[in-house]
Image (cartoon, rainbow over all chains, first blue to last red; front, side):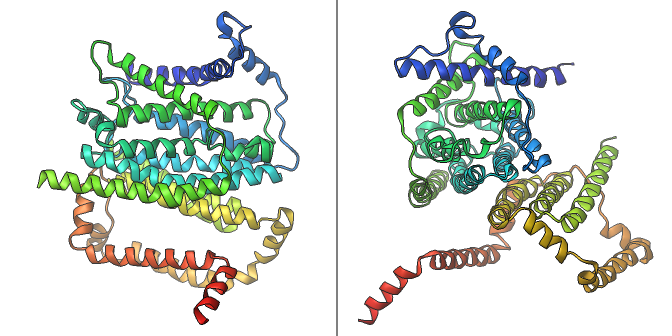
Length: 314
Length: 186
């Protein structure tokens, strides 16, 4: 019975957390910007999400007559499915993990490379100029940043000698990998922001230039799925950072699951702080930054890690 | 029990591969055709996974479905002109244009049928391998690649490097090249 109960509980908790982190972001952003934020519905405005959901579900679910209907409807589903699939391999606690298999990290890279379709197809099927521009930016940005997202991860794989996430967590019993891989961590973090196209790398939906980018034509719950998908992406990247560089669920005194939630929560807050603090770069600056600075750095990181590993082991 | 389940999954996946490959050719909308091709890639990756080559399966998704096809769609999205290009495609896709291709591929098909049904039972057993749950590790692949096949790795690396240099050369604006050659001549 527990074999199907655990995934179900994780799924429901994740969906709730994804929706609830919208409230968190609005409140925390408001705090940093000297405003109040949503504080009317329920205690501390906690039920704001419920109110928003009711509103968004009762809006007209409109498919533009000029759109490519099937693709238009499928693309918001892809982003949700791919992000939720990514959670399947994350070890939340010693016994709480949906799927444990040996090439988990490769599976994750595959998932993240497939999620680009969601935005590309949304942009294409909308049949509108702004959406298409946003989709093109996304495709270029995500493919570029995927390259050294993988390369940065390989440093961890070299150290842990394994692609499976539980083995990587087990390898960090003494020292967290952030101590050995500070550069790899920074590279993965930057690539992670670009992969889920959050501010400051949210050029696909830069509202000052291209309205709302790829989801300009979307309304109702289809827009809501893009929205929650983005926050699920934030949680996914945060929990990956926790797992790969900060010892996963390991920690003294407190129960493992609580440690995992605390660490992940810290990075979710950091993502929100980044949005509040850093302005958006220009599009060509983003690409130059990727190929001229980050790619050589990640190759160097992999080279040094491999050399040290071979040198120590002889 | 497990083998039986794997067989079922294999048959379903193979059917998906055939149908989506067929739809790739017959779809008039180029982006739809490419998406069917992506489905084919994903299904092929699942076949790899069933055969125990999970590393190859992951690479199939990362490289083909995740990078190559994205670039394909990227380019076609830029060239796509809505109804106009659809009409053009319908015009181009005509039975008379595909007669030669159909003839050649039907020859191949008959060859395949002949091999499957009219060869002796021994070869059939040796060539057709049933899906198994055997597992190939990354280490085995690495040892193979950097052992007996290291020359191929180096050659493919050189090819990629030359492709990269060519791409950079082409994408440089002609004005800068002209200025440089002028300076060189002087």
